[in-house]
Each structure stands twice: as structure tokens, then as C-alpha cells.
Amino acid sequence: MKSLYLAVLALLIIGFTGCGDNIDFSKEHVLTPEEIAEIQRQDSIAKAEKERINANLVLSYTVDITISKTSYDGTMLAIETDKIATLFGISVEQLLAGIKGEAGAPEAKGFAIQGTTHADVGSASNTNSPWGHWWDASGDVTTWGADAMVFAEFNTETGEFHIGQYPGHLVDGDTIKIIECLKYNEKRAAVAITILSHAPGQVTAEVVNTQNLTINVTPKTDYSQDSLEFDLPRTLSDLGVTSLADAKFLGVNKDGSYSMETTTKNGFWYDLEGFVGSWGDNATVFTTYDDGMQPNKVGIGQMPNKLAEGQSYTIKYGIMANNKIEMLQITVNVVGYVDPETPPAGNPTSLTRDLDLRKPYSNDYASIRVDLKDIMRDAFKMTTYQIHKAIASGDLKVYLNQIPDPIVDPTYTADVPGYWLKMDGTQGTWAEGIVWCSIGHNSTELYLFGGNHTDNAATGSTVTTKMIILCNEGQVTLNITFSIT
Image 1 (spheres, one colour):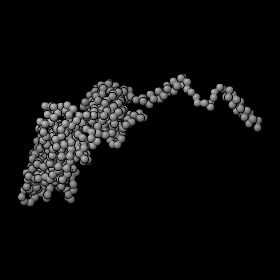
Image 2 (spheres, one colour; image 1 turned 60 degrees about the vertical axis):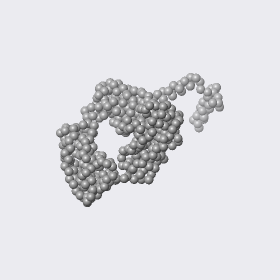
Image 3 (cartoon, rainbow, N blue to C red; image 1 turned 60 degrees about the horizontal axis):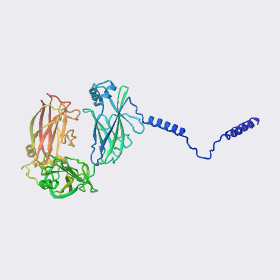
Image 4 (cartoon, rainbow, N blue to C red; image 1 turned 45 degrees about the vertical axis):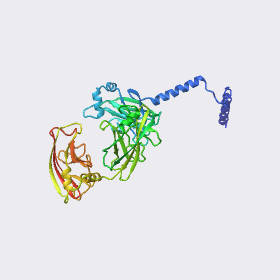
């Protein structure tokens, strides 16, 4: 009992002593300048720690890119590879070879650092280059898709990053900071890139004249173009120029605004409604204008296997100079194909041809070709266009060395229909192949084309194989000897 009494007494004494301080806890405490300064100091320490990049070398850059609704374009950024190489104690050439993953090169491994946590991301790349990543709005690594905003892809030949964007995801004023990194042994180098996005300039020019043009096209299985003539003298006169060398080309967006972000050669893809779009499921036709054409003609191409007889699209394609626009309003009518050929008489048959292909070694995948039009027409008793359509639909089938029993759909490994060939003449993948052979085709041509692998083939390589082509109950057998000279 006495112990309890002493404990209560001690608490009362402490309470009375505390009440002796002249502090009024009923009111909000106002921070003193000293307290504010201390809080700011602590915050700055915490912020600095959070933003600290765990690297022995940090290279910082800022780039500007123009936002696009249709293009992955951006800008190129040359980084100071010499400083990274010096940190690692190797040459720039060794550094680039290591990033590329060449055999025997120093293992300079790419990785990334998250923007929000500054944690390491171990993968070297999730893009089409050996070092580079997709990034979201927070500067964290992501994958191509809904969250992707920008990407960085390193070019080991030039020592530059291609900084690009996911079409339609950026808005004017977006700022995204990304951190691409390399490590070699225990050394780490970081490339911190601040990406500033800007809207494209607005078009204020007025349309001074509209030319109404019409073109009839047939459905196609490739990107080949039809040419359409416009009034060039009138265009030059209206725009006050002597040539279109410095003219800008415009497409019309759905909201009525103009797009200057060309997605073809000085031209645009158009969607199902005839407005500027992008290559893909909703694409229909596209326009081009380049040096390969006559100056009074534009090219009209189409999405392969998309158009059908009876369809019609109206698109607008503008030419701008001196703050004036000459508008080409083009109606594209899809009509049926009029075949100029007649099928050879008789029943389908089997024909054989020996081909001795010779090609100098090259490191650019250049190809050679051999005409097959006559033998395929004679064997299948079909016109060139009919065979072309059969290839596109998959009705024509190509096998190597023997016909499977039962017949199954081929699994092509090169340009369809075609194969990469291993040294023994059997089917291989790109990584295994020495040469490739494929059937090329359009509405007027049928041919065999092929070339050599840049790494696996060498002067003196020779591959022998048998290519068997089946269509319309006919057969063409090609006994191929392909020599790299």
C-alpha cells in the first residue's frame, strides 16, 4: 500500500513541475525561423538521398522532341562514350563492342534505374537495340503498350541514343527523366536524359485552290502505288513558286486541323473515314510525292489485302508554300482487276527446272532473282495475276526437298513463301541459315529471289536444295544450287 502511495505522489509532482513551463498547448505552435530552416535542411537531405544516382559517373543531357500522333520519331543524342570508356579502363571501340555483345569484348552490361525509387532494373534492353528501354510518364521502365511514353535505343555503330516516343501518348509540355546505365566490373556509369516534349507548329495558311481528282485502283496484296496526275502549272502559279522542292505537304485530321507529320515519302496514311491516320488495322490508302516520280504526279498506295471492289474513299492532300495551300481532294475508287492474260490451255502438270544461282558475298542482304513466270503459268495453267493472288491467300504452297504426307501448311522462315537454308539444304532459321530463297510476286511478275546471310555465309559456300511449288493441282520442282562466289 505504501508503494502505491509513493507512485501516485511521484506522478503528481511530475505533473505540477510540467505545469510550471510557460507553454500554452491550447494554441497552434508557430515555427521559429530556426525550426523552419532545420526542417528545410532535413527535407533537402531526404530529397538529395532520393534523387541520388548510384553511379561512379553521371552524364546528364536534355533533349527536345516534337510530339506525334502517328510516328515513333524523336531525336538522336550523342553521348560521351569516351568518358564512360575512361571510367571502365577500356577503349571506346571495346566499349561499343561490349555493349553489342561481340565475342571476346569486355562485358559492358546495360541496365536502367527507376525514376521513382532509383532501384536497378537488371535487363539490358526491352527495345530493338542491345541497350535501351521503354519508359513511362514517371521515368520508370515499362514495356511497349498503354503505359509507354518514350524509348531510348542505343546505336553501337554511332554511339548515339535514338530517343523516340509512343505515338499519341505525349502531350505538349510533358517532361520525362530517364536513366540508362552501364556497368563493367564494379564501375557504374549513368546516362540521365531529360526529355522535353513540344507540340508541332500550327498551320495558319489558307487554301487558295482545290483540285478535285479521281483515281481508280484495284485491290492489291502489296504496297505498290498507282500514279495520279495533278495540275502542276496551276499549283506553282497559285503558290507563287517555280518548283515544289521547298514545299511542305499537309494532311487533314478529323478535327479539321492540318498534320505536317508525314508518315510516308512526303505523304500520309489515311483511315477509314479519309482522315490522316497511321499504318495499321484502320489504314486504307496512302499518298507520296518524291524525286522518283514525275513532278506532276502523286503516288497512291494502299494497305495490302484491305481494299475491296466497290469501296470509295475521299482524302485531302495539301501542298503548302508562301503561306498558301493548294489542296488536292482525291477520290479513290476501288474497282475489279481486269486481267490482261488468259490462262494457258490444257490441264495442270508437273515441270522441273535446274537453277544454278551464283552471287558474290555481300554484307547487306542484297538479292539476285530468276524469272519463274513462264514455268509457273505453264505448270499451273493460271495467269500471273491468279498465281499472285494464290500466293497471297496461301493456296500456293512451297516445300523443301519433299512433299509431306499428309500435306500440311508450310512453316516459312524467310520472305513468304520462302526459307532460310542450312548448309545441308534443309530448312533453317535466320540464325542457322547460309542463304535464303523465296518466291517474289506481284500482278505482273513471278520470280525466285535470294541472298546470303551476312555472318554465316562466306565466299565458297554452296547450298543445294529442292524447292517444290504446288498450286491448282500442278507442280513446279526447282533443283537449286546456290553458290556464294
